[in-house]
Amino acid sequence: MSDIRTRFAPSPTGYMHIGNLRTALYTYLIAKKEGGSFILRIEDTDQERYVEGATEIIYRTLKTVGLNWDEGPDVGGPVGPYVQSERMGIFKKYALELVEKGAAYYCFCDKDRLQELKAVQEASGVSPMYDRHCRSLPKEEVSRLLAAGTPYVIRQKIPLEGTTTFHDELFGDITVENSTLDDQILIKADGMPTYNFANVVDDHLMGITHVVRGNEYLASSPKYNLLYEAFGWEVPKYIHVSPIMKDKHQKLSKRNGDASFEDLVAKGYLAEAIINYIALLGWAPKSERELFTLEELKTEFDIDGLSKSPSIFDPLKLRAINAEYIRRLSPEEFFVCARPYLEQAIKRQDVDLRAIAALLQNRTEVLSDIPGQVDFIDSLPEYELSLYDNKKMKTNPETALDALTRSLPALEALEEWNENTIHDALFSLIKSLDVKNGYILWPVRVAVSGRQFTPGGALELCCILGKKDSLDRIRRSIDLISSQIR
Image (tube, rainbow, N blue to C red):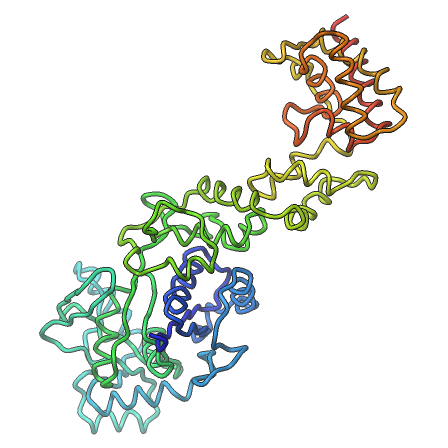
């Protein structure tokens, strides 16, 4: 089983979308579950769609999530090069071999003829397909046109009759009528191979045993099989995975504003949580468990758990999984993750960011939630007196005024300012007044934060803000209430 070889072969055409990353993950897991090799191959033959920097995005994304490749452009290997544009001399040779075997042919039809043919077919309600005009040209005519330098492509010669059957690990045996298959181009007029042809040749030469790709390629698989048969090569195992959908009708698409992997990371999702979630988009573990590290996925993953049905991307589910991963971080790990977001929101230098992070960890689902939870630290925001209304605490602006007026001197008297001394001062007041804790603590929390929801209670917030700022905020809040209810 250690002979299993899988490959992830992305085209450098932009960002790494979630569906592409899931394909990489499944490809990686199939290899690693059995101790096989995971190969990275960059398929950059479509120069019109090439995006500068996209290859670096691929490298960075895979490394970030831990999908480390055994062979690839930057690490080398026995069957390189691993960048398709560096393998150009290979494909023409194999295409000419197919011509010699009668499984491919030269096509000299120009763009005008092909466009006219397509227009006629569409007007007749016929699915556009090459009419095989050059398929039976006499050898002499082919030689004459080649000698004259006439531009050409090389097309696959699909059998005109019969059927082709291929096997997919999810969908089983699929049979198609050969008459429905087009004589696809293998080598383009510029000498570059098409994606479909280069894919087959490279997969064979690199010893790929399992091919994972989207089920939109099911329709192309019969042509792939015919190429393998024409060469006399062994066909790899196919695993065609179903798409990830935005909803029942739309696929995820960057064009529609759907997030790429890097977008999700920028929004504060942890890479480990993203990988865990997308593993579940189309794969069901044998147990009810949902949280898996990458190492655990290597053991738990199996092809039998893959689904034929499309999966709908659920942002709320991803958020819930991310929240669980945040809770599992050590305090130091969480602080490292949270620090950029804290520094984005808090500019003052006299507060303890670690102390704030400690309050936030169990209250944060996505790291980008952090700035909105601490935006009161630098300065007290304007707020409505209705924040003091709390039925559970039996407080309102009038009782809050009384609570704050009594709390102020108790806190002013403190020589040491820490959570313990603040606790003792306020709880002594509560005991002396014979009131519920919330009678004092709720108004103090609102007074120093101006927020209904905060990452900590009155004691923690006063400690973080410091004595001077806390007392100043309480005084301002007393003045605010007094000015509006009297």
